Amino acid sequence: MAEHIRFTRNRREFLTDAFCGFGSIAAADLLLRSEARAATTNPLAPKPPHLQARAKAAVFLFMAGGPSHMETYDPKPLLNQLNGQKRPAAFGEAKYQFLNDASRLLGTKRTFQRYGKSGIEVSDLFPHTAQCVDDMAVIRSVHGDMVVHSAAQYQMFTGRILPGFPSIGSWLLYGLGSESESLPGYVVMPDPKGALEAGQPMYGNGFLPAVYQPTTFRPGDRPVLNLDLPKGVSREDRVKTLNLIKGLDKADMRPGDQELEARLNSYDLAFKMQTEAPEVFDLSKESAKTLEMYGIGEPKTDDYGRRLLLTRRLIEKGVRFVAPISGGGPGVLQWDAHDDIEENHLRMAAQTDKPVAGFLQDLKQRGLLDTTLVVWGGEFGRSPESQGSKGRDHHNLGFSMWMAGGGVKGGTVVGATDEIGLNAIKDPYHLRDVHTTILHQMGLNQDALSFLHQGRRERLTEVRGNVITQIV
Image (cartoon, rainbow, N blue to C red; front, side):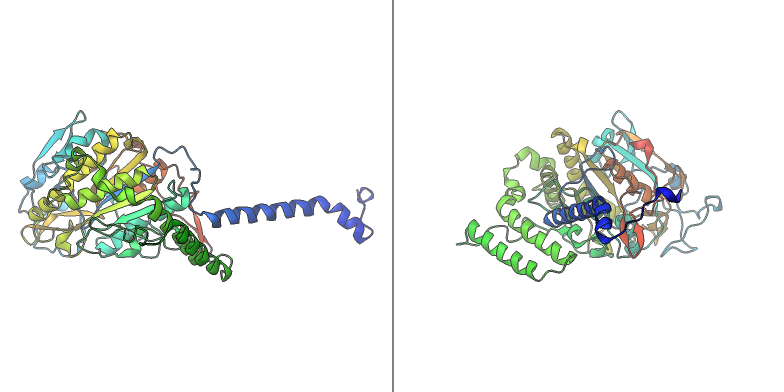
């Protein structure tokens, strides 16, 4: 075989033989540089999904503090029969923060009724949302790993119980980009009553590039300040100022400086918002019927109704992920009913029920529900036993969430907890299964959606989630 091999005799022959190889290497380098320049120019440009997407946008109606499943979407007649008794040993054990051996089972004063063609049972806390059950898939067997607010909130948003990991909103933005060039791709609307235990890290981009961080809106009728151009400043002057700032930053910019790239992107976005987005925040152009549908103008529902109406307007403009939060500040101002489950849940439901129903109905009548995935839930549920005499402790072993729109099978109930609501016993679904299902409906494969961090390919679901196939 050696006689068929001709070795190069000098440098000129070597370069001649290697010409095609060098050319392909150079072409590959030019292609990579071109892609890098394109990513730097607009890292939030829309990207194709891995799978056929059923939803273009997602909205997480996060009920902070932990709404009780027994008082909302999971009726437990036996719990009422055992009211005041010690939990039977046959149901097993559970770990809590504040319950002890003296704690006794607590029945509910709520009544349940079947609604819609599907006949799904819903509590009297939600007379308006109950009218939408045929568009909803109720999951009665969700479970998580933690019973403290901060860790459970981290897990709900990021899939991990510690801070520092990207939220699902950042993952969606990283995987799909944004369809809007004049609005943020990922928006959080906190409750005006205050921050949550997990704080800003629960919404953050973690180790993903800074450009995928959320934009947090302010409460009230001015969610974004300084949207108007300053008096006496023309659009042309603003463009010149923006170009000067960008030029100065780029002159001192190191290759791969993600923080500075994100800042340059925010300059462009801020300018576009000043010139193109003010009308999105002007709710005065909505009809009186629409405002009434969301409960805007009514003391109890005005705040959450405004935030959900703004959410619809953002979705219409191509925003990828929005999280309007219900509950904030001290625990009693969240769905955190340690002292009095009745007072707490009646108050919190009164603030959100009509706006949530109005939001679903509005999306549906505008043809947006088919392409918008809506998710409702808190970081955990509440305990079957009482804390004190009228409250309930945190509970992570089984609780309820629901999804609607975005390819979800409406009028569906999946999973179940036991007869007192202690454990998820039928088709239990971990929070990572909820995340996997959201990704799937948005056209993303949990394995393919990854980011190299400290030598490891990190994923939202740790490659252990399963799509809840019964509802999609």
